Length: 358
Image (cartoon, rainbow, N blue to C red; front, top):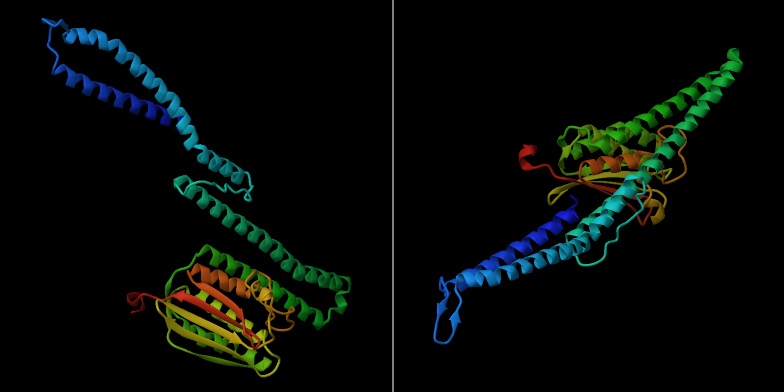
């Protein structure tokens, strides 16, 4: 049976039972004052219980049948009115199953359970639509980024094949560089997928130690580019994957170095402990960035400046990986442009519980 039919039968059954109980109560109350047999009095004839039953029985039967019909018809109508929002939600579910994620219920009326369900479903559809669009855009960008090094490799291999005796060291070095970039891009894509799936083991991690390790790793790059690195702050304990959080710190410092002023620039890392959270702030000097550009830097394959040539040019996934890792650790990522030039990136993560820290 459909839900509407079940509700109709429930309404009609409840109305009939309530009517029977009401008539039974009235009948039992009257019988207390009616004699068992008819009594002949001076004023006339007083009927007995049998006379009342014969007179009252057909009327009760007709009334109960009438109430049953009213309950069925009224219940069917009321159930239909109440289930209209559910029909709209079901229609939206069918359209979403067919791939139409742009449909919205937009249920009007009072804020009842159906309105709450419809609003939650609309919010879910909006998130799904945004997620699917992001995945499609990411797949297109990844395909484009991978196609470039593969096409270059194919061209250089064809040149070498056409004249094997004239393969210069420059061609080999170029092939090696292009292959390295393709490998870096593939590893970055795998890391991004791992962060999105949250497939990692959590442990207590000190962000200040990760900052020191990132500085030690990227110090030669900073020296070659004339960038001064400053690291300071307090012990900042959080719960998460040490490898992923180290990747986050390294990516942020790498961006701060390569997107910096050509001479005498600075990059700083500061860790701090706030009420129930820890923060890692990375700042760098550099050119002023418009706000509309800063808002897109966490998207995959977006760069703050033109593509960087030379060593450690990156693959355009640095801040996208950072954003995914921070989201997987239930944190927040804030990217703002500094008024004097450069950028400030703040990572806020939940602090490790005292028991876990010990």
